[in-house]
Length: 110
Length: 118
Image (cartoon, rainbow over all chains, first blue to last red; front, side, top):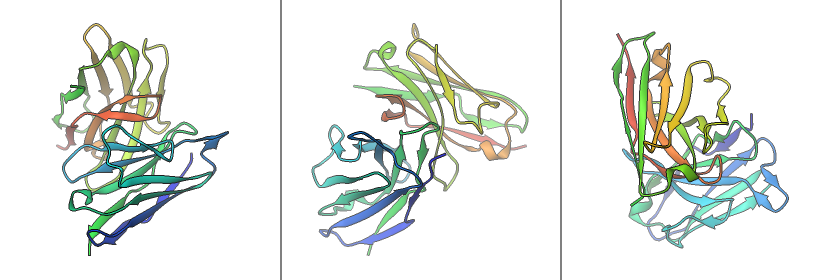
């Protein structure tokens, strides 16, 4: 299985940039497709798709969210961070079944 | 409005079975793969499996394939998860999701809570 590793927590200040990483145990890219996706989960809520295929914003997601990366290294950026962005963020790969998730990065306020 | 609503969760004794349902609305259910993900208390997300549009392909996480069965009824716009031989490790919130394409979960239900305890 492809293992995805995320830092468990990130402390941020409102209005600043937040950057979190997701590392895959093997490449999740095929040709020009980077099969890494990001989800946001607020406390007590279901996850919500944020970014698909590494850098594409899902429908209705504000432009302060962005994603980048390829191969094994991926980044999710929030700029600027707003209070509504306090949540846990999960990466997920669909390069190889079984699809796997990272352990999540909990974004907290400084 | 695109919506997924899970039902059927609750308290179940160890070793028993339980069947969850996921009612879909606001989109053409027949056109999408569907899947299930679970989340144990305080833990991360775990992929359970997925089913294609006509039920001819069903994929499971290898560690769960002997315990869970995914099915769907396109006439009823409903997805199912049959769970058997439940243990305390299966205590979790179970989410259904629309997949577009397979694996990518673009719409999630609110979740059904399952607690396995005597």
